[in-house]
Image (cartoon, rainbow, N blue to C red; front, side, top):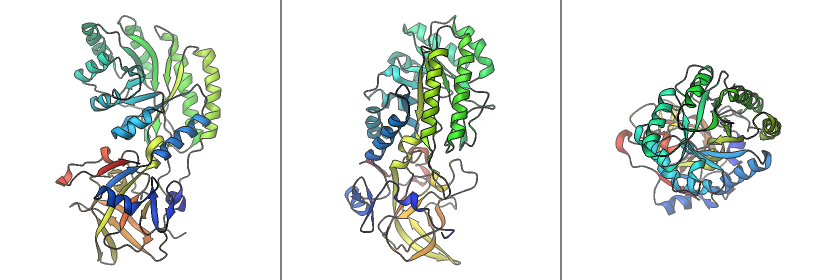
Length: 412
């Protein structure tokens, strides 16, 4: 394979090709662009999301509750669709709270996490009977005070910063000094104080890391998660009824990456579920997944506005850019920039290729969507499609930068 070429599994794993055209939700990409009336746009294929959820239901134990982390993609119609297929929703803001309260999910199965929750956010969540993940001693006392004034007894869990990390993760969420959760060694004292407050204790939320493609690392972290919960259960004011084990399931973005093998994870979770029947007999185990449910179901489509050569390098200038897809530009957590899988959506079978750079129209050299990739020869008017764009796309991007119009989003 040429060093510039995109791996074929990224191109064709989910979106078929018919007569040169990438098919999204059963429609040719050019036809979809014409129907929407403009580019750029994000498109999400509901069938791919459904297949992913059903696959998890098959591979994971029946007793595992499946939650969707709304921050991965909060598009309202997408959240509504997923809410019909999962057991709970995890949120981290007032906006996500408002959105999820409009779904069919029982508010008691909506969990509100994140440091620095505002008083108004907490009060709204308490009144709605949403479960609150406590992030600090200060927040615990604030919740108790607000609840006393409102006459509601909130259901709470403690978010734990574990004394271990999820190895090989794209992003560590625990294990060291962090603003997220309560250090495991501080939890016994906090639980002792919690017994003096009028709060309904449910259990623990332990989330060690995200974007992991190594089953062995996830299994190790899940084993450590249950062991930590069992140790901390010795100090709880009532039996643990919920253990949210986080997620961490990753998807492949870059050449050389392989899809996560869920089978051994499911087998290990079955063993953990059996162990929990004895050690935490009243506890339900939950997984909180975001990117893994929606990431591969979405694409970002933009159109070539100009093509130019500068000192030996060819540039495709598109109507998209980092202001709409920050992650693809490499400026959303990448230490060493790598290209997302990208195709020319209306020239999928074209044999003649060239090495190009794909950029947006922002006045910054950071506005780079693909760097030195070998793709079919493209011209003005062709459609650039960035795959793996269903998670942390539009809402994770600085859309106000330079004041360009927001892209359309569509669920197909």
